[in-house]
Image (cartoon, rainbow, N blue to C red):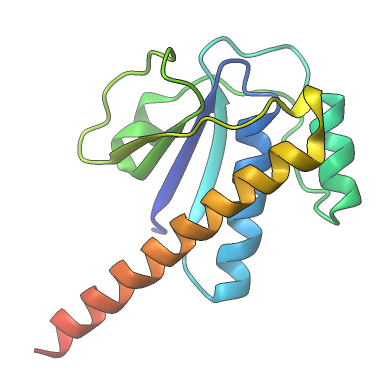
Length: 141
């Protein structure tokens, strides 16, 4: 099973969707077995049209049909949990490292939000690569 990153924003409709889509794409490009899900603490009925249109312009058309709620089983198996905003209350994952990212709202401008999110996603991909290399070195010993 691939290591999982759970992205959580309030409505599960914009920031988490953008982050999960970009993480899946960048991990695949890097040849890393890494997966991502997007969810919300209070899911909206629809995805943000700004996020969907921006992802489509970026060439990323695969997004879920609608925002998803937080799933405890995903939190329990997560390698990392990223929440967008300090005020989001999420059930505590078992062993995952929890990060808080403060980025611009997608509705205020997709490009600025995407750029901030993608910069942080690159850091996650680098951390996953380093963890994989450490595990590989440990296996060789």
